[in-house]
Amino acid sequence: MVDFDVTRMSSKGQIVIPADMRMGFKEGEKLLIIKSEGQIILKHAKDFDKQLAEDIAFAKRTEAALRKYEKGAFKKMSKEEFLKALKQW
Figure 1 (cartoon, rainbow, N blue to C red):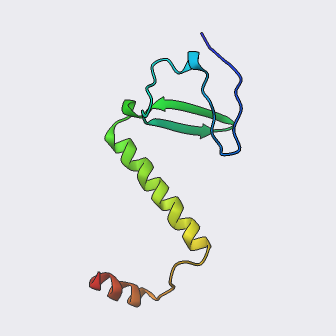
Figure 2: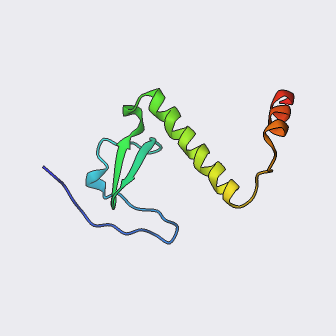
């Protein structure tokens, strides 16, 4: 059976999950949010294994680095300069 209800998003991007749909979720519990083709899916984060959590964290770091790169926050250097810096690191 599929349950549905209507809610609104606040100016801060917060969405209230109707009380009858929050059953099984606890205050402060971590949730995994998946957005795909106009749908948003919430799942208990505890239902996913550690590797998936690490993969998601890596993806977030990669996206943040890409945004920094697009803003010009990274320094350009040659391959040789990079390898030299890497050795010092």
